Image (cartoon, rainbow, N blue to C red):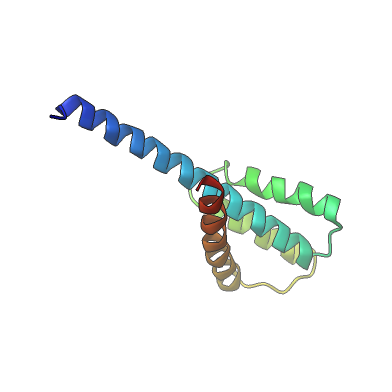
Length: 108
């Protein structure tokens, strides 16, 4: 019979795995968002890769997605790309689904 402590440990391990997975998915989404935005701004591949890393790093400024959204929206505006917050949020949502699939495919 499974003891309470064993169940608690199993729950904690599952929670930790879920948190790690969520972190990976969010980071992947931000990378994809950075690549997408870099394409809209006309960045060459090497600059796009650096920009994608900057978008990932922007997510560590504050909790939630608002810091990422504001960075990308501001950068797009500075580079003359017509983008609304609504459209950018929609792209972020779509890329989150892509990131989930990619990460799940990688982790098996």
